Length: 65
Image (tube, rainbow, N blue to C red; front, side, top):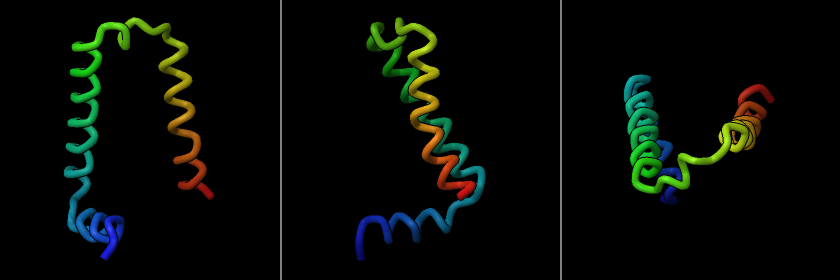
């Protein structure tokens, strides 16, 4: 059994709120990294927007295609 097969089986056992908690913990980890490494938090706003678009567009394409 491969890694992704194992992950797929585990994810199917989760509820919607489990996925939400994973998202919240990821956001918290990113905020912790930003607090510990100040240059990350000092980027201009458009860099965060660019990162958002680059990460979101492929996922939206998969979702709607």
